[in-house]
Length: 247
Image (cartoon, rainbow, N blue to C red; front, side, top):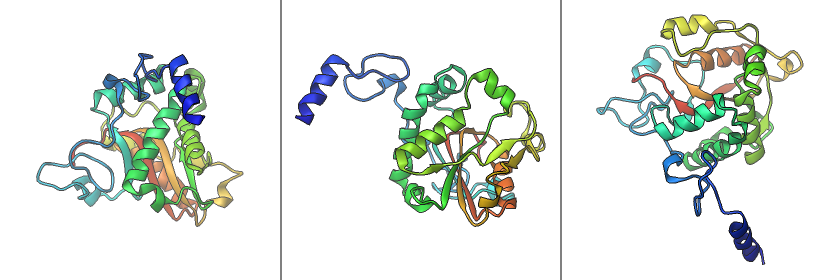
């Protein structure tokens, strides 16, 4: 009966691509908008930066060797250079497509489970919280929503984890895409604070920071630094794409 109802539903409402609305005949994305299962090539096991061909997947890049980040590790769905994934992120972040949080969260969850990352982070337990990197209220008002918060909530709902908006922005910052690496770190220095009603629950807890794109890693580092100052035991990072420079 369940199978027959599913077939009837497919006949009445054929599957369509989340991104472009084209009928797919099966998966929830068309061939041109299929989400990647992982970033291509060898990647740094700490920050997901692309490694030179001489290195093996999971080696540590020069950036992380010379200046170890405050977060533990990064898991990315793909590389921002991948056109299909970039189209999803731009639509989700700037195109008003808040509905894309669910399929993007589902893809991230598949990647986390395939790598064993989900189990090692113990999302299902009370001890680990999913924490979105927050937008400044002015930017959230301009965009209409906070994409990282939507993604974190969708991940929590799909995985049985717990989303807590522990961080808040203390000041407005310009976009991180323009300046160099040192300027990016200066740009976000001290930008986050702990939410007063949750700051006493940070100590001894594990966290997974959620964001759309990791560029220099400065924002994630500042978020991790703020949580660690509050007593966090471990801070990892989960993002849709890595745009961190070659290591």
